[in-house]
Length: 118
Ligand code: 5GP
Ligand code: ZN
Image (cartoon, rainbow, N blue to C red; front, top):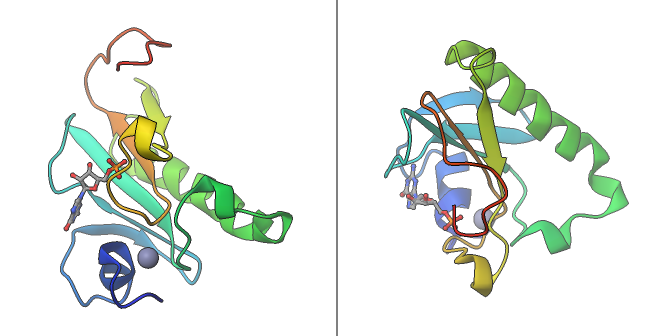
């Protein structure tokens, strides 16, 4: 828990968010500025700045993040229509919040894949 971190404070319910899934390892909540009908962020409850801080000791956390993504996609009704998962990492990717998060986008046809600009 990092008291200066926005997403740590969302995990602690210090800052309100629309939480769609939470367990002892991960939290999923709606993005405040959605870029698609479904735009959800899935984060580890433990503070880590980005993917580079994941180690082999985080296997359970990573599996739980994928589980949460699956659960949310099903609950949002986009599991069959499709979705995209994205993790901006570092300055070149314009990562703005330095607490690891996967974006989940869905609910409309997204741009063609494998564009670095998407
Ligand atoms: P990044 O650019 O770091 O990959 O994405 C950060 C995301 O966090 C952005 O999509 C932004 O809209 C979202 N965000 C920033 N502040 C808040 C907030 O206070 N609450 C929620 N729910 N989302 C936020
Ligand atoms: Zn944090």
